[in-house]
Image (cartoon, rainbow, N blue to C red):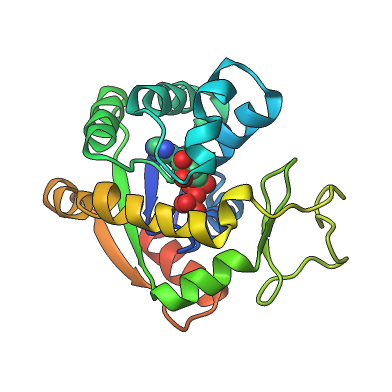
Length: 223
Ligand code: ADP
């Protein structure tokens, strides 16, 4: 494994609650890649109460996708940051066909190869996981009250901020997010398997986060 001599874009693809954020954190530590989570970026805009935040707040709270042009623009800007010198992990992007086409275009322009990892889930596990999820509003670290609790209850291990339940982790909103996934995002799998040279399926069912990250690290490192 040598992550220093070529850039790579690792795309973590999967349903809401499939563990994309948790796996992204592990990959950041292992390979020094820049974590690009469109959900986290959008939540920061909502928190900052800026123009982008105003545009997306209601859509996010309803569990619906925000406009493609907006996320495409955010992702392209991240790719050009100096922290992306070794490459990036895309978490929650692409989510529509238009986004996937744009991603191929912006990666090709920069000569960055992609590795797609599809995290396969069990729906019942996912619903339980989302309900137990807590997140740090400051650094984005993700915890789970059952499988990965913080050392001190309700407090982020990294920066001491008070952990929050995401407003879209309510049961009725989870259902909308699953529906958006089924209708707009899952159909992408077909496109990605056809267009990507390196597409891998990783089964997350009944497996620990550590076992899954080991498998993903092996796939990403094998190049
Ligand atoms: P999850 O994958 O667990 O649903 P995310 O944090 O990735 O959560 O996304 C939260 C919300 O942010 C989505 O429901 C959607 O409203 C918005 N969002 C995130 N990424 C995208 C994207 N690539 N395209 C459109 N909307 C997005």
